Length: 238
Image 1: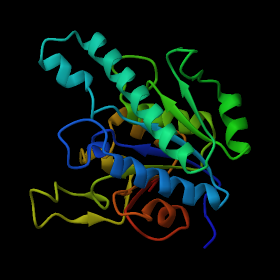
Image 2: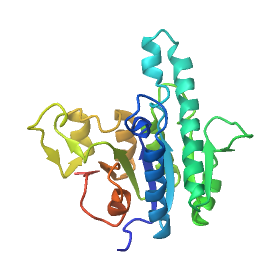
Image 3: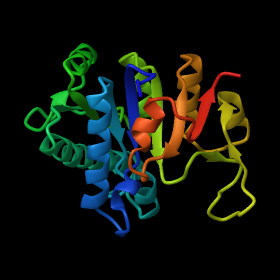
Image 4: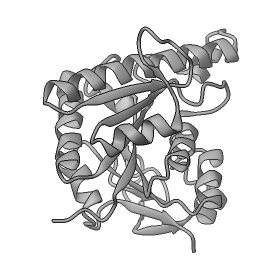
């Protein structure tokens, strides 16, 4: 099947990288992500990625343990760089050229984020992974994903989660939870559906950037989303 998007921003969860472990990186999960990303690149789609750091450290939970919030957020940004490097390694192992660009400059490890350079890499068929969030505390990697997607002119943000879409309440806790096929940005904000944080949703709404939320742990689902199969939930303007 042909892809329906030319350039996508894939938002991966740090927590999902843990798999069945309590923390760290599951080789099984990261290997699955790498294979699914290669499938999409092989279709000719330009792929950029933002990955969270919750499998290693979260700024908010650090604050609960007495870590200063700004320091905690900086630690969380570094955790996303660790995940970015691990994902780069997995993707390159199966033959796809990859570049990591970071919002905090660390030239011995990765390139700094430069919009034009990122776009050029993608035009050449390279996967670009954006690490260190936005480089600012108090902003989540969801906001970083929305921001980078807008900056690189992506067609869509596809948010990989452990559930198969957006529900009116937690489907793990409530058996009568109802899944949305499509939902508007305003509904997400008004009903506090917690798909992404409010800043990320507002950025996408202002720039008319659709979001698709889907279960990425089922192998092949990233390709299915990009070829237009109706899985997950789409967030669009009403």
